[in-house]
Length: 130
Image 1: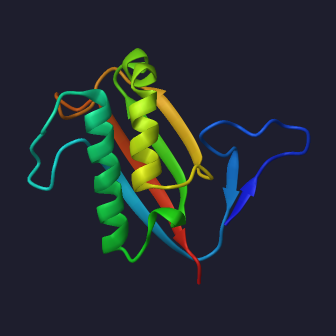
Image 2: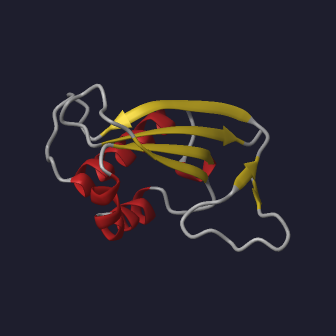
């Protein structure tokens, strides 16, 4: 994968402006912060984000991919202030589970998610080199 940074632009903190990749595509649907039995273990934003990231990693593995293959990630959050307040813990979980920030990322605040207790939903597109 190649991280895209236009000439003269500052490197963004915690994500990439763009990524170019070739290979087999693996798409992960929106993962929320519940476990494999669809039970929430916490209502804490950072805890749900950690679980959602772990769920992403599990689906990637099932598709023969790893976190290093992630090219694009979209976060849907129900409260941007809660998300921003949890950034240190989210960053720690991200480093532990994903490991790198050279991913084209978007974060969007939404009015609600389909599961009432869900505070964050993360979807991913990965490219496994051919």
